[in-house]
Length: 249
Ligand code: AMP
Image 1 (cartoon, rainbow, N blue to C red):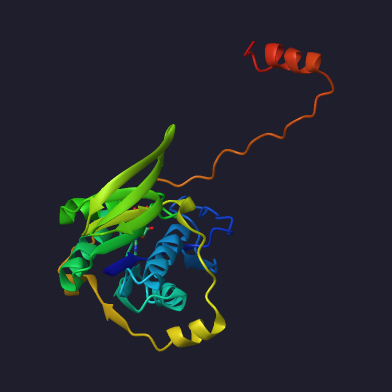
Image 2 (image 1 turned 60 degrees about the vertical axis):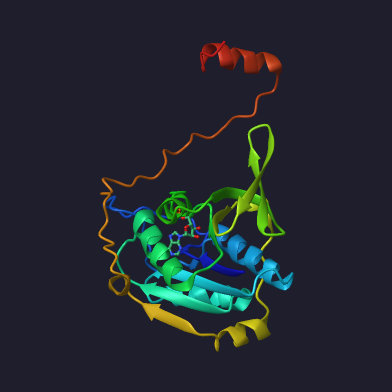
């Protein structure tokens, strides 16, 4: 099978983000950027399938600025075979990403597209679902286990009250949940090898996709600061506070 893995460059999950003083968005100046954690899980899953002999080729795709090449290089160092960068400095919303991915799917004919369930910058959780709709392919979202069995996939999802297993035909769109796997760190030799793997650079125009944003961000705000807690000596103190301060008893 051939697998396409879309990987997004986002603010590193360890960074405490700051809102710009004019509320127009998050300050990205001098902020560490990394591969979206759910995309790392997607790359890891594709690489494990390749190691099992189920997958023959992994293509990592990123839509973003020139620096998104680094994100693709990380995927190549983890084990992807080649990359495609769709270069743009504009904000690209999930629908535009899904349209670009649909065009790349038409060019590359993969059997599977494995995406993260959500990007931790916009928290949209939309791209995989939109892509499945555009392609009219089955979708298995929030995968916590993925097994190839004969000519189909068995995909497990954590749902309220238990586990749901889907039997899916390929081609299909999969999105990854946190417990699917633990992504590997790329070894130094693999980082060096990744420098020689090919990355094709394209633009949204090459695919004839209009990426003009359809949403307008009105304002971005810091969450309200929480007041400090207090340690109480006795249960009676707690009951008193719940009754007389919180008003919940
Ligand atoms: P979202 O729908 O924005 O929460 O993103 C879900 C997933 O879609 C991510 O984990 C990526 O796999 C993929 N994706 C979203 N935006 C991009 C992008 N600009 N480049 C590559 N993949 C993306």
